[in-house]
Length: 305
Image (cartoon, rainbow, N blue to C red; front, side, top):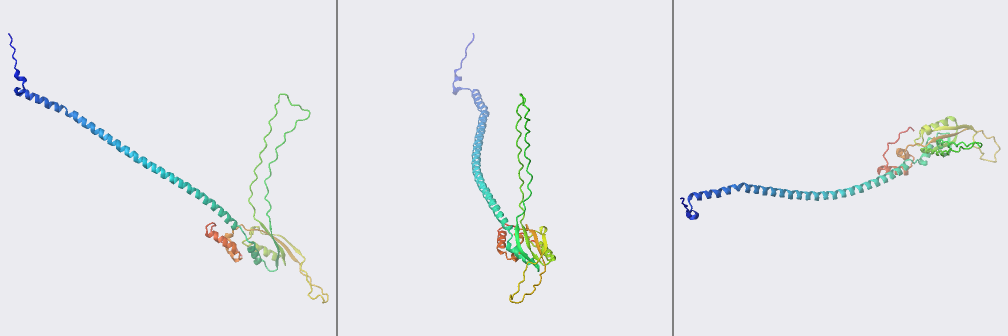
């Protein structure tokens, strides 16, 4: 027969054997050690999340700062563009005014005062030569290019000919376009000096002296005519009551015409000549324009007297 031995003291904690207590303590300590990796993983995940959140906040702040700076730079760029456009407009207006000033200065630079030219001719006129007239001659017009010939007329059909029934009318020939007229630069004005001289040699000397004048173009100064004529001077007796006496016959004179062209040299290069001929008004204007920088200071032209 089997007997059942039941010990109820083992169920009471105060009567639990020592071995059972040790085994329960081992079990509890083993469970705590098993939870350490899980706690570490949780702490690591929390650290990563905190780092990611911190990085996100930092990037967001940086983006905001950069956006603010970009907007400020855009505003500054728009302001600078407005100023640049204003400066361009001012420069354009300045260039326009400068061009107008230079054009006006060019007009003054091309002026040749007649008072200075007449004084120069008077100083160069040799003894025995008289100037009776000085006139300005308009330059001869430049030859104009030949116009294009008119389009050839379409030959008319003979009276007896009849058009074929299936033929279509021929298209009208296009009208040729006329060639544009070439722009011709204006020519310099010419001056004709006429008078009388005692001999042909004096006329020749006078022409050579005119060639040396800075107001005229030496390469375009020539003698147009020189004719020996009777002296137009008439002698009269002072005392009409005196007996009639035979008046001496005067020597014939040479009637001449010299043609020349105004020099293209600007007045700014003729300042010493203008000063010496007392053309102070034009000289002062030229010097003022040079001081203002509108006209460039030119080296005076050196020409044999």
